[in-house]
Amino acid sequence: MRDNESSLPGFILLGFSDRPRLELVLFVVVLTFYLMTLVGNAIIILVSRLDPHLQTPMYFFLTNLSFLDICFTTSSIPQLLFNLGGPDKSISYTGCAIQLFMFLALGGTECILLAVMAYDRFTAICKPLHYTVIMHPQLCLQLVAVAWLSGIANSLAMSPVTLTLPRCGRHQVDHFLCEMPAMIKMACVDTTLIESTVFVLASCFTLLPLSLILVSYGYITRTVLRIKSAAGRRKAFNTCGSHITVVSLFYGNIIYMYMQPGNNSSQDQGKFLTLFYNLLTPSLNPLIYTLRNKEVKGALRRLVKKERGKEVE
Image (cartoon, rainbow, N blue to C red; front, top):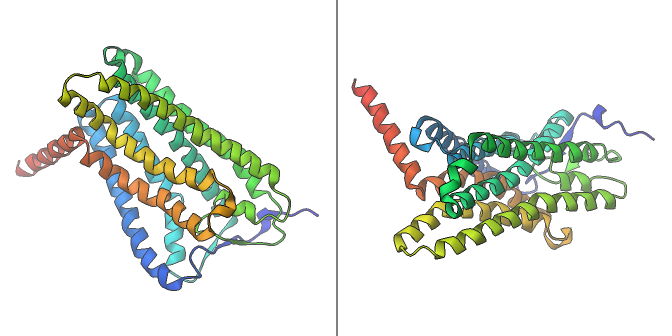
């Protein structure tokens, strides 16, 4: 019996509908952090592109990360706000397919991009004399292209498989977005093989880049500890501190969610963790990079002074 899923009207995103009082609070919180994400990351992109002092590989990668975070949150948060704001919890089949594809592609891209940023910091600190030669613009573009193409390839491999699983008329997704684990749980067939494939791909996109990041920071730590000047060591650690904080927030949540057996965490816990790395982490990234980075703060001050100067004229 053929199950033509594309003919279905759509799905019901249960989300937090079992807690109607919580929905109102979540609507305000989610909207606030979503606006913070859009404004904060847009400012990072604007400052990095306009200030000539920030025309370096580090800020090129940071610009890509900010753009990625905007896309990542926008792939699911507007739909969540719509569902939180009223009784309608539905999403079309096409909308669910796009949301699933974007979520997988952008999440995979960010895993690789954070590893690329760690390599950039490794080169800057461990090989400072060769930094400009190694991290030339062409290589930077290639590394970013690899990150984006890897995420897209991951999504192209997993999205169709997930969407075409027989669901035997089940339309209720026990999540606030069309996330792969929640969609697989709806299937009415044995999904052991798919779950194993998901685990392998999740390992490739989390543990492998994370291993590269840890190796990079192992070399960085060893190099920094050899610096005789306390001020030099502090400057080097401050340069990497923002990236380490972002990596800890992003990978910590993903590993906790995907690298453990499903029965170890409740579905509600999974929803809140997904909300954390899908919304809170992208909204905190601009604050982390601006509060810990003197160059970004200096660029912001120069940009504000420039705009004030134009108003005076």
